[in-house]
Image 1 (cartoon, helix red, strand yellow):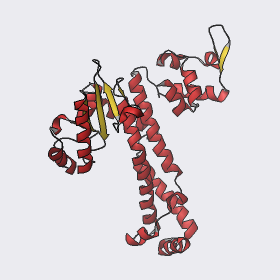
Image 2 (tube, helix red, strand yellow):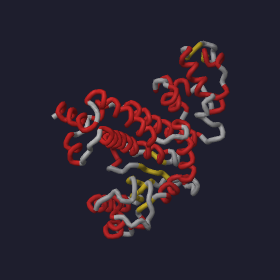
Image 3 (cartoon, one colour):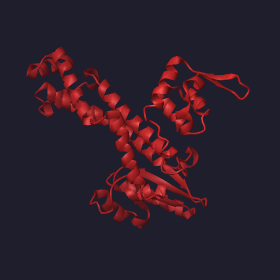
Image 4 (cartoon, helix red, strand yellow):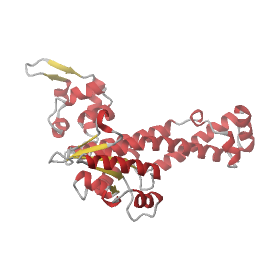
Length: 310
């Protein structure tokens, strides 16, 4: 956990982050270490084994007092907070770095959707670009969130994965296989039929397999829920939907509530009292000005852009 924080939030390389983290027994040890002691980390024999630059020391000191690590939280909770902040900051940086060149507005969409002002053109394309990035990152982010739920949960190795996303090993040594989907409306009939066979294969091997949905409820009136009832035998016993999934993996009925609390607090550390939507609006204003400076304003500006690219 500390190595991940040093890499992602303090800016160390993965190798140096791991090396530095290995010198600390726990979070308190790291938070309480004084600058003088960290300048020249020594081995048992007294030899300097790890040298830090003044800039690295300054970054460590800033991180120590930032509140990024809390001795009141468990290692898992601190790790959850870190990956949440990293995700939020990645999306914030993406929005703030967007430029007109990144958007490349599609002329066919401009005409087909009657985008008749520069602001409308830019706003739609900023939201499209931001959404693509967030959706792409979200899958990896949620997988990391799931992996924090239990020390007994891991990604299966490639040789035996067979398409399964996660495997949980119980205290009795039983392996439970999980195929993870986002919400409870993300599977079609062919996918359900495929995973029904995979679940049966695991049952034949004396193991369990589930389809897990990270959010939703069994009572949701979605196409996927309807198909599960029709296609997956004993579907209630072979699916984990929403809170059921998080409770099953963590074996803690309060875990999902803790996740949302940590997510909110982590987002506030990065965004303060703002939201990513407000950042997208600021980005829209900035790129609209860029568009006007390059192509002009109003319908003439749009026409100038169309002529420039088509």
